[in-house]
Image 1 (cartoon, rainbow, N blue to C red):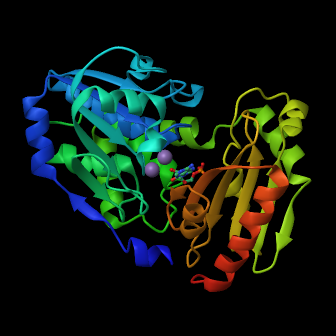
Image 2 (image 1 turned 60 degrees about the horizontal axis):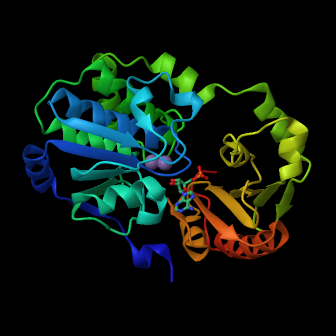
Image 3 (image 1 turned 90 degrees about the vertical axis):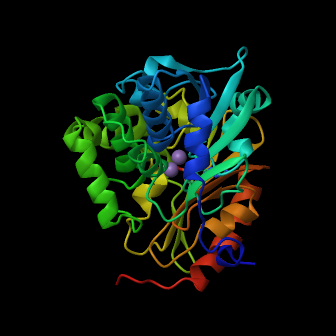
Length: 338
Ligand code: AMP
Ligand code: MN
Ligand code: MN
């Protein structure tokens, strides 16, 4: 079954119910997805900061806390790495397609909140929670958050504009993905007018890389293989991390870099995680190709052109399974920009 058959498009937006829930709430907790990217942190802080401006008491949390790349954002220091006490009127989940993605913080927040608002833009969103703000054709969770905040008729302060623009810029790789619309650019314009610097955000949240992370790419690229149908595959072992002198997890955007290769219709990075037997699969596709189906098959999720999963097994087994699915995905796709 293809993803289009499962979820052609989600536009389920209970704006009024969300406004009512917030109006009645005094304590709110916002949680985003594990291994947070710029959209996760940006949408979480944007929402948290707007609610704080409305006089609400807001906690925010993500398993492991805020990655160093995003500590420049306003109130990033309020992001908790773990939740172990507190009760809330409302729990807002941002940029998470399913409950498992919200990690241990999400599980705690859900068990100790009365109402759950699910704010997201993934085509694979499971519509968990009580109130849905899910728009799968929108560029980023940050843009969905903007759509919500705009209706609250409050001014966008720099504390709200900077995180939201960070979410948009990082998820669209600098306004370059196929889900960028006139509306995305208009939203960005409003956020820039409200005090967000596009130059600063692009430099700090999107382009900046450590020497060591490129060293990891150097190690990993030795495993690069081009498979049938234009599936470009790179694997990363724990030894590659050791050789590169890196002690944090992540591939630093390698799959996004590889899909730019002319011969690649689909790029995949298959990586051993710090946890034994847990393999991370990160996939990117050119427009016209679909990697979301493969992610769903592997127990993960994402978007048509950017998806991922964490799979149990050995690197070799997960690679074989993933490549078999992706070669099929490459054959069922068609290049739309030639
Ligand atoms: P990544 O390749 O890790 O940057 O992830 C690309 C996209 O896939 C993002 O939109 C993620 O939210 C989604 N994604 C990655 N890993 C998972 C997972 N284990 N479960 C669900 N979605 C995932
Ligand atoms: Mn994300
Ligand atoms: Mn996102």
